[in-house]
Length: 394
Image (cartoon, rainbow, N blue to C red; front, side):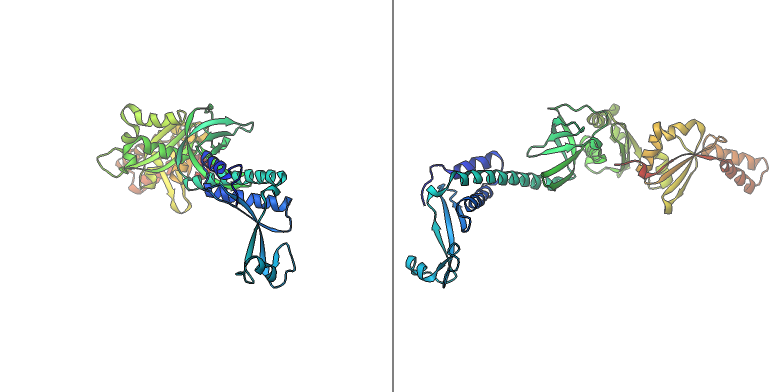
């Protein structure tokens, strides 16, 4: 073994530290690449091994031959008789190593080793990125916006890797600027032939869930529970909350003094409107709350079909539907029920209907007829809007 003029170990150590790569993995990759290059360009028919001492930097290239009774392939084998002349202690089946003179390392072989090493380093770096982020799926990270492409994709720097924000995962209308820092939801990390792909999102409802925990202590410590979220990024979201402490108002806790808490959340989402509503174990009450700010009447629920029919008066109809059907769409996603809105012009609300039925009974109409009259008020109602939970994507 001789001390090389160029210390490969020191050079690889510097590269490993600069690129956050395991030093021993990089040395192993170098040994493999040099062995392949030497075999291909200098000794194509021989078995070659390369060893680099991490401490001293000593590099040796070895030709390995197996000891056999009679050699049939002199490139790969050595006869026992010839082997005993070199080492009296050898036996059949053992391997002997023959160092290669350093002068035989041709420039072509070293260049090939450099190219292979570059490839190995790139693969190693990709594995480092994949291994670092594969277990962080589902987390929210702070990233720096770096660039965009002609397909509308934005790319953000996470530290060791770069994540992509495709148009479908962006907040519509949000203006991103290189150099700014934003919070992203790490949606997926997968391996591809070109390296790991890290998919980030600003539109995912789980980003909103994270921000609620960050800005609202009662949500973070579990006193107030976020039961469900439906979101149309950049426009409007609905959040259903429930308090495990009778003394804590879940909606008030989320809104904060003069709206400061919910404003901090919406500020991170490009001023997206966030409606906080009360979750209820009673499906009818939950659907009623989800359709707010509209005031609705009778609600019929079909649990087995996950469907509901909601009666709405004309003055509340447009509010219940929302702009472009957004309110009823978000309510359907939030509750998990298809919502069919039916208009009625006969009464203003459920209380009025009950009062009318009571008045009819007092005027001499039998109880049964009063109920029939009450039910008849809704029979000629026509369907005006329908929304299913599937009508809104994540």
